[in-house]
Image (cartoon, rainbow, N blue to C red; front, side):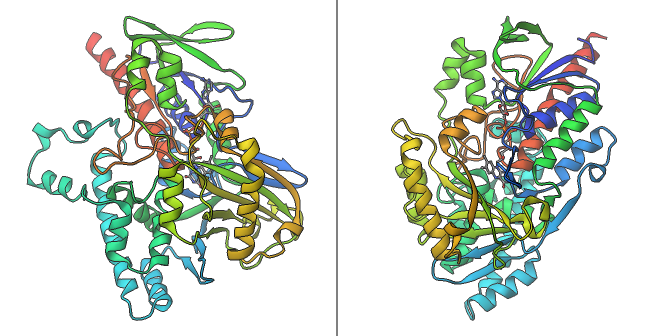
Length: 508
Ligand SMILES: Cc1cc2nc3c(=O)[nH]c(=O)nc-3n(C[C@H](O)[C@H](O)[C@H](O)COP(=O)(O)OP(=O)(O)OC[C@H]3O[C@@H](n4cnc5c(N)ncnc54)[C@H](O)[C@@H]3O)c2cc1C
């Protein structure tokens, strides 16, 4: 095999774009396909009546991942993106009318928590929680990140690595505990615990079902910050697409891939409506389960279907162009539900929208005035909902649920005149998300991370079933969220590149 093999990337989500950049930087001939007429997948943008909305992700963390992708090509990320640190990171509005800001500095946050709940040791509990989170992040860095992992055996080469240190690391993964129980073991105040639960909402999973190792997300955010790329998170997709183009990748929007050509268990190309095009390898950024079911098919597709992967949650998004700003809002805000147990039980167990939901808000005009006409706000509202069930008809469900969300914002978010202030309104429902991005049951964040032992594992980046097929994106290792999907793109491209170079070396 030649060291400059031809690679097709299916899907231009942030994972697909990252894979295209890394693969092209390593000297491969890359062609990237997306069924949509824009590049970036969920990192899309909406322009309407003078307002600009990021349609999908709005919170950017761990910019180190992006820096590494740009460094692959010898470029400096900061020549492509103007990143601004946001601190406070989130403002939190609780149902009882109280508020607290999540600060990046752990000592400052602990002191604020002690003022919020005097005499309860909340600050000390928070510092101990961040200590656990840091340790779990260190272990994840060693065993889990930047490598193509499918299961426990991939993370730990038992024979080579099994020593007292490794054993200690495995035991310290706290496989007996969930995210929620780990938080509540250290932070007793129900409101503060509810705030900390929401780190795991970045991966669309219940804190009661997600394994404790996902507490590592908290340390990733306190250590590396929350960032806003000027121009919106859409600017991340644009920067990656620009880099891929500069590196010689061919970018094909409005090109749906309908199948893979596979011979003797190995990828030989892909099919579009225009016919079959040969490639040495394929990196699929389409949902992993749908890749196997719809693009691979046959016995492999059927066998994959039987694996018990559960979609992550879905969501309703409102894009509200307002003729005023709300000065009490921060750039990122959470307006919390009255009862997290009730909320998560509805979303993740009952499979119905929560009657009193948590709403995440982005009010970016104070950081980036270009999002709205002067004095206005491009308010983004995201409420998590269950993934699509067969009886969910969102065209019928949406109007009533929209009102539930607006009433919640008026009541708990301190915006009593919100409805009168709307001059532009658009929305996405789980059904829209399902169709726009070709995901599993409308899932926003790929596959749920539920299960104490296997919850953190996703389909591996190097297919065990089909040679020459690699997976990247929210439904592949290491999982969803902007930094993780871009890392998954790097891993998929790196796995392909090492396979090619290994084969080239062996046949030289
Ligand atoms: C409303 C919302 C809010 C979010 N908020 C945040 C946040 O604040 N912070 C954060 O870190 N993450 C957030 N996320 C999650 C984050 O956006 C995703 O994890 C990430 O962007 C997904 O990237 P991906 O690489 O998996 O690809 P996707 O964005 O899912 O893109 C996949 C692409 O593949 C294309 N495709 C699929 N099948 C085919 C085919 N057969 N042929 C051609 N093309 C195909 C699709 O058209 C799509 O463009 C949010 C997501 C949503 C929807």
